[in-house]
Length: 521
Image (cartoon, rainbow, N blue to C red):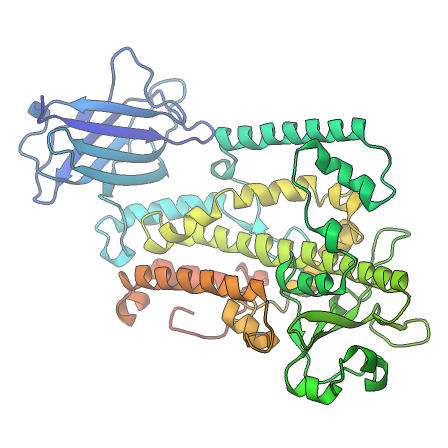
């Protein structure tokens, strides 16, 4: 019995993933030896149920002279009421030595087709002995993964969400139960609090124990706190080095003098101590009826204590008598309100662009192109696929529930859904992978890479550590497969993927903008 093999089969947690079909497998080793056909069936058990792991013991008598298993051949028939079958992975284990061969399947198994999967199943297409199988599967996936621009000017998205991209039962259950808990907490808060009339009233929500009280109630009025929000808050990609005061910002050295701590403005500009946040992209955005959205310009200074602080805010782009510059020397309440109007505009930018356009929507097209062009056996697919998990599902749900007419955005955001979409159009047309989507280049482009000039920029400092750690890992991984340019040139899946990513949306591609960096592009 100790020479027997165990075959572990993990059926996926997808809609209709389980099967009642008859399943068979043949094991192959690297020396060309094979087993006889093995029927995978545990008597009196309902095998291959959705999300389940089944283990089958195979007697040595059925294994022949096979050595270490390097490849499997798997198929099913059409028997049973539900014969469709999605398999996550299969592990073949030697019961005596405990050695395992792992076969990531990650695909639907067609009836009657013999799938041949290698141990770990990772190779470039030009070196795959079963490249025709790869081509067949990619052609099938292209039928389900198709591009569509939901509205003119928006990034491409999935046309119809494939069943494979739906939330798994376990994941859906988790987010549903979490929502129920939050709703219950919200109701409890409503029962125990009155109408919010001040920050103290708002604090009552946190006294119920659902969430800890955030830092905002203690520092939201403070200028240093306002400065830190540009460096270590939700929207930290706007701040830029200011080398000259723009004409549209109606400030002079005499106006700013009380805030400059005895420094000359030109010296501060020269020493890289003046920074700017310009939300010109918001100018003219249509908002919900009766609601106003500013398009502010804010000026910041690194003070003598190396802290970033605001020194001027102009709430609209064109200077004039009806568009004054607000200063820290104004009445405290006037200055506080100016900062609040700025932060409202900053929130509109963050939700529409930093969050929605440059993250969710930009990556949706990449995800669709990856599924259309890279086989599950491709090394680049394997390193990217985990990061696409539920991306298409959450984007589809968000557009249906949050950004739809009358949805959450229309009820809570200044721009409403129409203004948000217009912002996405404006922002995405100039977004570049090699600048905005590449952290060191983005920092350099904004002039904020100098740690000494702009200290306490925690987003920059922390994100760079992650960026270089990821880059180091990915570089080593990719170099395992592409140690020569010939391997890049000969990889037709990679070339097709790159072409579709950079192809204009109007021509059926993703429309990513990138400078020619390597033969891949």
